[in-house]
Length: 343
Length: 297
Image (cartoon, rainbow over all chains, first blue to last red; front, side, top):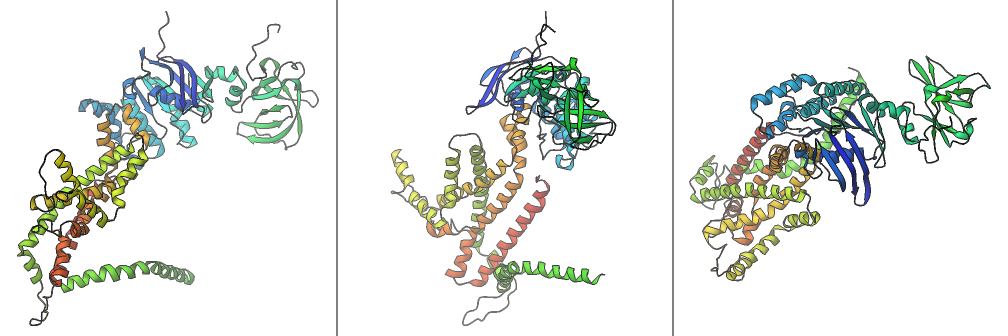
């Protein structure tokens, strides 16, 4: 018999004055997993997190955490901690007081409080900063204070609402690893909201991609990358995103409305021998490789990856071949067509 | 130094002084010079036809210290300040917390609380005169419904100062509420959410988070309330004229009376100097001492 999942969202809907917030959100989260809610701004990912946290009440549906129906329980009764996008640190309290705020509220004995504080400071590398006020810390340090505050709460479920979006790119990369390691070491379950697909793909065990208040696809990063359910997923995930080609532009695919292909499955071909003839629009040098943007009247997002530095003048016409066995087919509405049986 | 650089620096200095000039002229004319002149005239005796004005140094001050009315006025004013300042600040804060929460007709509530502040002092005092009038007044009319005897609120020493205090609190708390309301709105909503998640009660959140964050506002309001408590005079003209038997006489009213009813300018000047001195000291203490314990964002 399979154990019940740690967190269950069942048919959740939330509307704001009639306007759609999220709808039909059904999701299960295993204990100890790292789940990313991914999507463009306004897709409802933050709303979903706030519904889970108990900061909003759903109009429909049911939320179960650790076997208990918490749909109408206040945030404090859900046994979870949260890291806010703005960190939500109390500006007049020192780092130590910020971290210990919850324990003081819950009347944890002083010795235990100090011990937990010390451990959290150690884990987040903030030892020596206990007496600073938040405005005397850098963005990355504030972010770690917010993490420390979530850690000392000792909850098994931790929600994070775009915790890295206020950090610069380099720091973001470092903290990303820290968060992932922390989650593994503490064995906690993390639900993580982000609009950055790299973050979601690199950290999560399970990615939930949302658009316009609805879930588009749930799966491992690998599934989202290689088997997108629809063209939205295909174009949102991956850098560069999947290229979409109208079927009739390719010989042998005239009955398929849209073909999807990843950049790594596109190769340069001899003149006149490729599947498609395209014009070069730009070259983007990334160090180890160069992305060559291509233009074709029946395709969008075509990118050719070439090792090392390669500079092809814009406007030059080149031929490319596509690795046939990796092509994905989508129907008129953009949904994936499962491999046809006669193949 | 480079000739152009030093020229440029002088030009900037002149520019800066020019910008300061209008304020400096106005302040000197209407604040600094009068203060010094007051200090000067407080050290001279009052001239009469037989005794011309002469220098008495601290004579006027020791006269005041020996004047029982002066001490009564000081006592009245301390009592008045001691009640009105905390009470109006407390009511202002409570109203602000309430008007800032998720209630219906928020705009109406805010406007209603602010109305007393908009009314001119004299009009407001006349309004309250109507409330307090024995027999005819609203208070007595309501009292009569419950069979209570008619009370001359403003006419007896035991209740007169309290009646003045109530008018002041009614007038001031709406004004202070606006400051608290503005400060409350700068507190980000996610602080409340973070506290909620930690299981903090509404009271804990207010006490540990909101009140400390409101400290700069509280300090500002405190200083203002204190200055106002010494500045009050308009109500007294309409409501009691300092009576009965000096029970509602406050410091500024006594100064006015001294200067323009008894024509004793030197003693009025001496009192003014003492008020300035005390206010200055209190404001300095509030700012320098409390400032250290206040968090500014």
